[in-house]
Image (tube, rainbow, N blue to C red):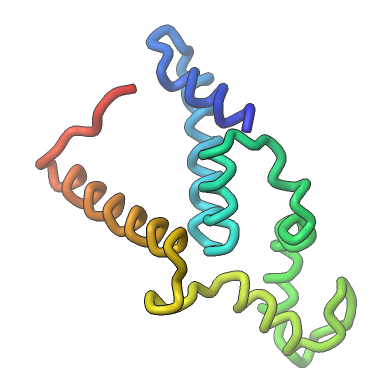
Length: 142
């Protein structure tokens, strides 16, 4: 993930310009926010960070839905009465189920070890964020 690598290098560079820091933060904010919305994508994202893969869009199972996410959500918000078949979804119910599936997370007792580690990591991160926000702990620098 070359853009994430360059973003990290920018954030660790004390001489980076304000705009460069903003752009670097943007890469992480968007990447993490999107990954948190989709459990399957989160597992893939963590795997890419661990192995330094560079092109998530090359993964066919994800690219179709992520490229069309905005239009899929708009079609759902319009409701059943205004639904028009297309984009691989012939019925409103099919579209709704796909979006629900992409946003769902299996119950804790159905998670495999990798999934459980991700969930635990997210919980620990949230706990640390709450502690830091309350002023008990300062975030560490790069």
